[in-house]
Length: 325
Image (cartoon, rainbow, N blue to C red; front, top):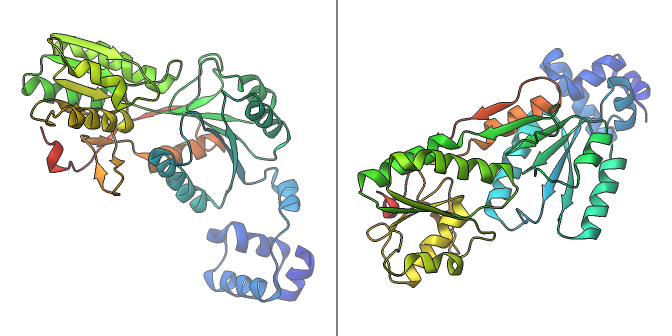
């Protein structure tokens, strides 16, 4: 059944049918309810190809998901997808996922094919990289690209949604200074990733005002074994700022394995929360990324409803007592 046949069956115009499905604010609620009930009874839904031709868009957004950064099992990507899903529902949009592991040639080839052949209205590029091998494929796709958690200077036309890293890092350093921390380590980070580089640069810019001795330890993955040597000896650190919640969680485990108390012996701070194996939320964080607001703005950028990149401030969160400083 096509839209003309259904409209005749419903006794309304094709425009009214279209509004009932896709523009509910332009139709009376009782009319929409009647049309949707009839559609369900006869198993009708508008043809997406026809809708794309008439509207000039597919109502589908693509997400480039970097598996080498955030695998399906990581808590943060699950939160990103949850926030993105909520916003897609509110805009009545579908999601096309392009998973890619840039370390695997066959995965990169698949991603290039997906970017060339997919019918979507724009791409959300999660955790862009300066040397990203997908840049050219995204450029030639001819679709808008919005970078999430970073930006690509080589592509000035691409908009970005980022986090203000200075807010949470300065708060962490102020708290460490108040407890007289002497040696602070900034732990974790993926080389070449703008989001992690922004965090490291913010730390290096701010830390001289608060702590006399400091260092950085880039590592990916950031594990307890990597950070343990910095917790031993005469030059052992007494405070760690994790580049993210996973790095902080690894630092906490390293301290526990070395019988160091957190935060009495070593303060561990970061952003966001991280569940342990028992499913409890563990985090030495006072701030979180406002993912719902960031995803909503990214979608509007990609659809052309907004036209400027934006940097979001982290939002305060409740802090578990065991990590209070």
